[in-house]
Length: 300
Image (tube, rainbow, N blue to C red):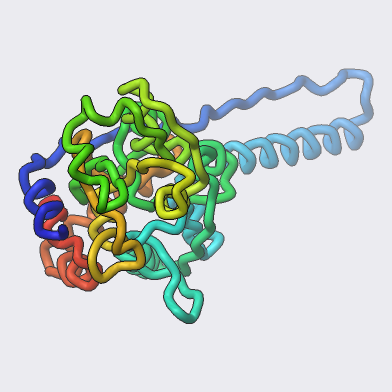
């Protein structure tokens, strides 16, 4: 199973860097003439007050133009939006978040001199969470779709992936191509690349909160099939996993993962540098090997 998925991922080419630009705050100033009727002392006080107001306005302008990197370093925490998605982000026995993405995010935060905080989000609301500053980035095996790239400042791609169909193992021989899927009901994560794939094929589906929930639906028999990320399937489906009676059949596409920040954020460029360094010194590969995703890594 894992060899099949690894071969499929090995054929996917690396993507070009997704870049963007941020805007700076405009400086404004206005000097109000003193009233000729006011006494000299009063006029001086009014001038001082106007200066104070101008200073305050300047401070507000500076704050509004603060870089995202400075904002995160100022508060001392990088807040990372995730879902439960093994092997990228999931909890160990002690309840701590681990996984390839979680470990890389922790290392990146350390390189910035800040702590990391993981917040489990509704994947369908990821852009709203990001823009509302309840999180600072989305780092959770996120496919670089057109919607994502237009709504976020994205890092370079770092992992290859694909959307694949999961069905009960005893029915797998019935579903070996896209044409055979038309009579199935699917469970897919809301707002995911999997949902995009089944929608484009006009297949019947039920949106669920997370990809792990989609697997539960198939295991329980409430959905005929699921569409999930191939990297998740390698970790959670088939012999030796918690879903030994489920298997992979059809690959629907090939895609790449990236990390999303607020539009215009300079954190994306900082992460690209971190990716380049960690790929070059072997630390990215070492973390990938811990979670079995080394075959999917994209050269930085």
